[in-house]
Length: 155
Length: 107
Image (tube, rainbow over all chains, first blue to last red; front, side):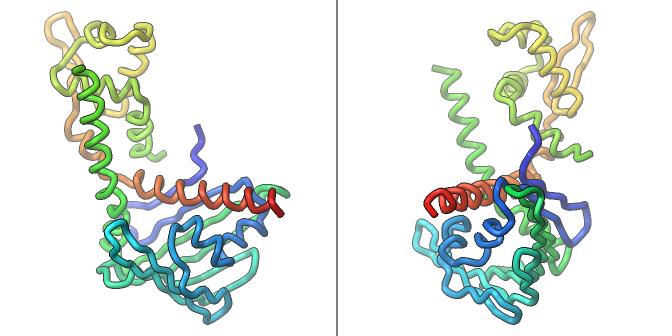
């Protein structure tokens, strides 16, 4: 099956590209990036501030199950409705640095649209450590899944 | 072509994962592997072919028989991938899509 979300990250480079085709008209896709109530829902974060305009800034805050708070902040450099957002992104108090994100929105048909997200990191090493973040969390899940299968096959 | 993704597609299939788990404990012939499944023998052969192509399994001939061995190095390599990152974004975008669809239907 064709995957809807694609990630391409070439070995040794300090950037990556995420592309996704949506079963949504362009305006709705863009709205999901602009209206705080929608951002909160799909990003699973609290939006403390979101100024969707040139030289605007944003602050998101996520609380983990243990109650620790994580800040995600950045500045918007370019804001072209239904077309393009250029912004920085930083996970506060982490060693992952600041990344530059170029988001391009495109109409495919009346009811479908496409997002291309180009992310540039400070270095190739930094990109790779960000890529490994969900993996570190996922590996525990994979292990418990294997244990589950093994337990079932024994019984 | 992204070979790494192919490895992930290979292990995304439940039968192929079960084959890998079987062979992980001991090398086996195709017949011995197939005996563990209700699936038709040609289906199991097809899975073995895919796993061998992705280098997750290696074939070793011993006498007249071909044994399948697990390729631990490749398994490890397959693990440290882009896939969890892609999944994370895929799930986020799926949520975005369903939220915005709901929003249009209530408008």
